Amino acid sequence: MSMKIDDVLAEVVNGSLDAAASVPGVVAIAADSSGVIYEGAAGERRLGSGEAMRTDQVLWIHSMTKPVTGAACMQLVEQGKIGLDDDCGALVPALNMPDVLEGFDGQGKLVLRPAKGVITLRNLLTHTSGYVYDMWNADQRAWIKAHGVKREDIFGALADRPPLAFDPGTRWQYGVGIDWAGKVLEAVTGERLNDYVQANICKPLGMASTGYLLTDALRARLAGVHQRGDDGAVNAVDFDPPQNPAHFNGGGGMYSTAPDYARFMRMMLNGGSLDGAQILKPETIALMGQNHIGDVLVEKLNSCMPHLTYDAEFYPGMAKKWGLTFMINQDDVPGARRAGSLAWAGLRNSYFWIDPKSDLSGAIFTQQFPFADPGVLALLDRFERAVYAHAGKN
Image 1 (cartoon, rainbow, N blue to C red):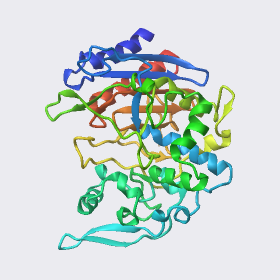
Image 2 (spheres, one colour):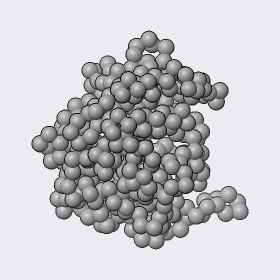
Image 3 (cartoon, rainbow, N blue to C red):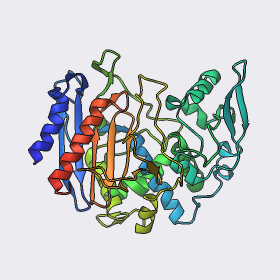
Image 4 (cartoon, one colour):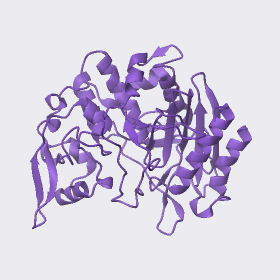
């Protein structure tokens, strides 16, 4: 069966199923609570390099950073240093008394009003704070253009603080809430986010190739990144984020490897511990996997920046909820993940799932824009089904 999973990866690289949806390279891994049950790689590290993609390749995981930040924040909740429903504006001034962007008047000017309610840690971890991503929200995109700020600017001066898209707790819309949760963590602990995460998540779990800053040794294993153009062709591009950033973002910016991320997923499957390291209590892990948005539903992501992301919706027609940093599917997926599975993704087309009922998790990593590439999503589905068949849990 391992060869069959290998074939799933090879087919999307060589384009034998759909040449227009082929990818330069992919790494994939699957694990249960006891250990890794599959790992493989196919394609090239960087298109045209002639170097094979390897299972230990260092990869930019973007929003797969979010669950790591969420776990760090839940450690503080366990310790009683902050509550899920505490007013985060009391800790981070930028979160205090925000405005809501209602739209534009007849002259095209922004219409703002004070937000109703406060922003809580639960709001930040569940994308119900009102802070959204401009790549999926046209009004937010217009605000950023009008003010001439970059996304990293919003964590600085109050004048650069963007407005909310809605009142806290009233809707779900994917956004920068977990970036702000990282700022809350820094305010509570007095530590920079990267230092806290290394000491309290990565090192205890043995995730030695995961973090925000690259060493020379890690850079030597770094995968190349790619862009699919309007003509459908994929080309290698340069990407080298600053190694001394003013802010570390809880919502993105980490690198990792497939084996490292599998250790995080196995910790979740093991009720918060792995190889003797207790990261979170079992009851906290259970809490993270519950619906924390009530009757609110996860919404489709409508792209405003097509070079970065296509429109994205996972399992159209199925109601999705959100836990503490994870999407939760409400129904079984035939031949694949069960209801109650935890999942999300990274902007360069990396995806993971954690299925507690089946004691099974998996992830695939490519390194290309735009997000929600149809070929990669098809690969995810085929890989997941092959994993469940391999594990005898389909």
